[in-house]
Amino acid sequence: MKKINLYKSIVDDSIINDFVHQKGITLFNHSANSNSIDDFISVAYVLCPNIIEIDGYVFIEDFFIEKGDAALVKLSSLKKQFDFDKRKIEMWVNSWSFGDFFIGKDSESMENDKILKQFGDILVFNWTRRVKDLFPTKNIVVEYGEELMGELGLTITLYEK
Image 1 (tube, rainbow, N blue to C red):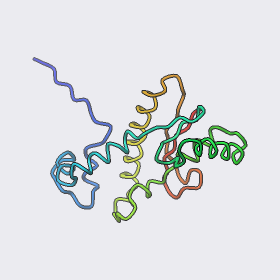
Image 2: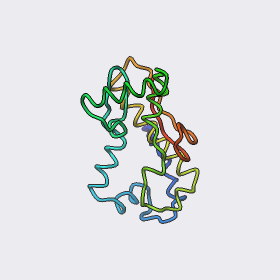
Image 3: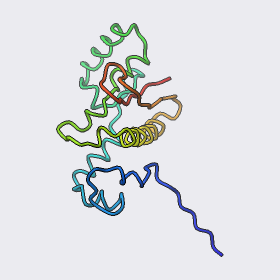
Image 4: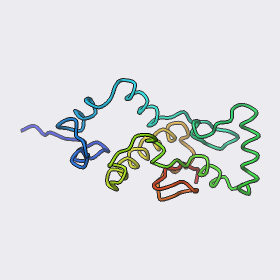
């Protein structure tokens, strides 16, 4: 008899049962029925964002607005603000509230801890792979927790340990 192996996703496919509005019989089907190609591409970008390294500091580019010389000036200002604590600087810039990912998209799912934690696990998995690929010798931590660095609710962050 031949052996069959199933390699489970990092996403628990039964999470669809916690969705308020199911748009398919499987999670894959729900996604196909819910999103345009534009949506898929933008979600892929969030899962694998641009990363910028400035003078050894690692940031999600979308969270570090300044560019060029202005970026160096901003980093200098942050060093003074955070007493040259690299970890705090990276955490502060890279902290993003889960709610901010869904501005203007009211959903009862935002009140479901199981769904929010699944979302956090997905971000941690993908961002960790991204930074490990870019910086294999750096010990970069991606984690989420409650109200990190002044953000509201569950918040993701990224910093070098």
